[in-house]
View 1 (spheres, rainbow, N blue to C red):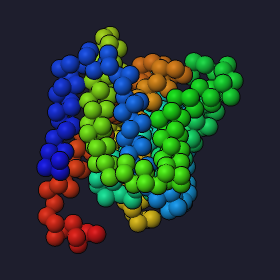
View 2 (cartoon, helix red, strand yellow):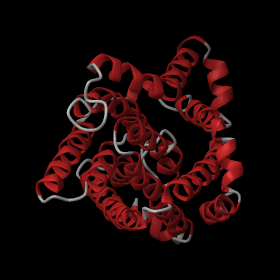
View 3 (cartoon, rainbow, N blue to C red):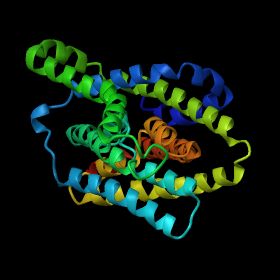
View 4 (cartoon, rainbow, N blue to C red):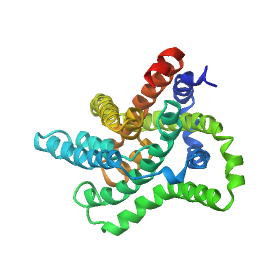
Length: 305
């Protein structure tokens, strides 16, 4: 598996592009795949080691402040609303549910990643309705209606597998240990989910691209800039707390499917193309990171550790 895992993304891109209509049609399977990914990883987490720390606080603060700050700044200089809204949702968008798979393969601490996966998603469920109360198309929607709508999208694939794993650890430890032996299967579930998500991404761009070529090009350029900024800043911040890989992945790897949904639900639907492109860039970067790790000599890895 290690030998070939860095080729999963290029293969997913090619197959996703060639058969995007097919993958878009079966995209409803993604939440089930994510559920299995999280369950397999959560059962391997030592819950007692999970602590909300300063890294979590600064990552949340970055998402909250930078998303709104960039939106207001772009509006002040009269940038197209589509671009400003794309940046807003691109920074505020919660961490990908499957982040634990890649982050742990790259050497991040499993408990650190799991903690922020849960808290970061809950943070967005609270902050997003506040922002959308004065930004976007549904400013009249009451806060709690918006809050529960977003929470409804998040909780099935984040909260449920966590509490199921929690119950297994405390009440059925033997079953928990048995399942945790197969946590390596999460990589294959992730590969399938990646193929479906990228296929849907390409299909989305093809469907909404006609007549909006200029905005799409700008969104593509801006998305790669913010993808680089978030991964780089996350790594820098993570290094201050002894886990640069966790910091980079938690800030840079986004739940792009959820981001696309938020943009379509609350903002100009074209703004969601920012997240569609972001999905490609983050997975290209993740593939490169896996390739780098797999081709780094063992002696170098040991020294780095």
